[in-house]
Length: 314
Image (cartoon, rainbow, N blue to C red; front, side, top):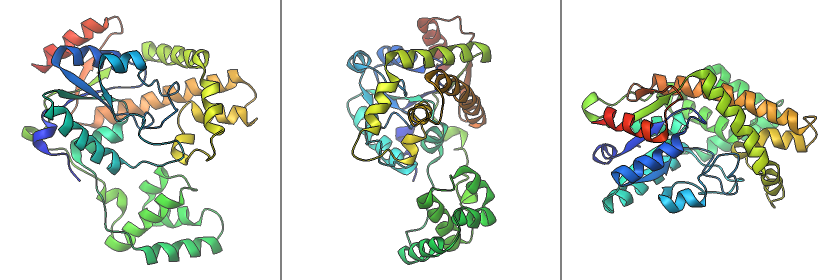
């Protein structure tokens, strides 16, 4: 599945690591160019997960329309292909109103899917799946993961050993195509002439960013992250694997279950893992050749960053 080229070229993209200030800058940019914001955050799609995802508040959403947030409940899963489908439809509606779609967020996988498309794979073979699951029930725990590791070590490293649905799908793709899913998923950059012009990622100083991350986590607890997690756990259905593994939520859940000794321990662990995540985000955006790096010092105001971005754009 590919994003239509004529539509892609009408979009702006503003990526960067968590806590760098993308949201505030996107709002300023949207007001300047007549845009609407399209979330590029894989956790902001979940309803009720607001504080831990730093989701735009009511004032921000009243100021500029925001899209692709609050799409599903925490117990549901949501694929990259589903995101791309919704993103295309959303952008068609925005451009139909004479407005500019501005993608904003830090999920590198989403950004790559927008720029390079998503490999959908062969149709499901339900007989094969059933046979594989029946065999897995007879085998020791972790058998599915071991089978995938033998044929596709790259994908096996990315998937959790208990994620049966994705493990079975990966094995199914290999069985039906004879090729490792990690090879099939290697989408290549668009030709230069087809790439969107307005595609940027913010690259801040590491120490400055880490200070902002630490402070953001502290503020999340002040704003009520614990209560938000308790509400999620009180729902009739337990959160799905993706939602329950979200940064901030996973650690608070572990604390509430007694697996971490205190709120302070949970807070410190969130800070550490978020800093590690920001480092991985940096690698994602640096390796997407379509993205233009915007170096920032951390001393700029939002207005300064907007001017810098617009100067780079034209």
